[in-house]
Length: 259
Image (cartoon, rainbow, N blue to C red; front, side, top):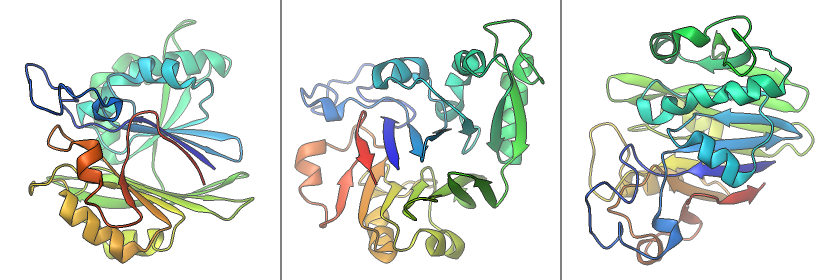
């Protein structure tokens, strides 16, 4: 299984507009964070989770050329705004609609923001088309399984997803944008080879896990490796990562994991 981090930043991105702090002006490329999304390749099945506003640029930078399944964790703009650029992948699958899995809230937002794309086929070559499907608890593919679980995020629930590759049996859990994990989410991810957790900032936040909260959850999960994502400009990658416990690190844009 391969995991590509297309973006690891919060809704404002880093550098932030009009900010001259040490992180926003840092020469460390790991402190340049586009909005959060991830691409998972499981035995050749290409799964995109979320489409940030920079999605097209991220795909070009990371040479993402194939997309078989799209999962929208929730309908917030920093995770949904790049979905219009999925049009290219509709072309690449022969002018078909791309299947989009999400929650009821996420599907409702797609219908509101991209009404022209909710169709069985693109209106014309080069247009997007989305087949909207409620995300089930378990998706089965020849290449493996994707489990989903709901995670509390302020007034809505987001999708947490756990990939299990059929050939290797290895597991990868992706839990972004959440305030805490449910018992079900913990059980699905415990002992996985790799886990990604929301770790917004050092300070508490009402709808995201802080870095200390994410670290505490990571220690419960006992994964082989844990990566924190959705980071603000309050995190300086190098110095702050040095203070994390063994096995826990900050993700960064362009990071690739071979699991």
